[in-house]
Image 1 (spheres, rainbow, N blue to C red):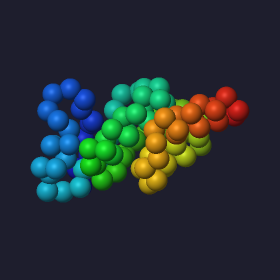
Image 2: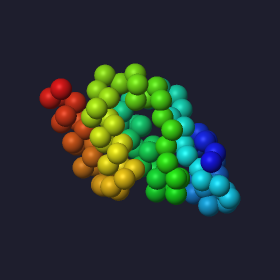
Image 3: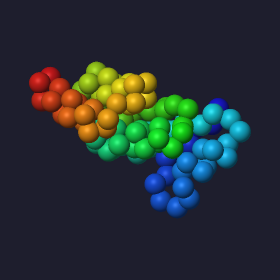
Length: 95
């Protein structure tokens, strides 16, 4: 397994994933807001990554539970991103 940073610019990320002989997971990268993180995860999953390896963007979040639930829906249930963001935003204000 190899852990890489998700790259938006340059080479098509899905080509990088498809050319790998071993499973690829993405790192969380720099600190970012929750919505940007969810969008990055969704894009990476659509490119074919095998999973995610995210630390500070979850652990330093004020609302870890809601964020983890949203990430789980993206990774395991492949739900619509806009629906997930609406649910996360609603839960964020309730908590």
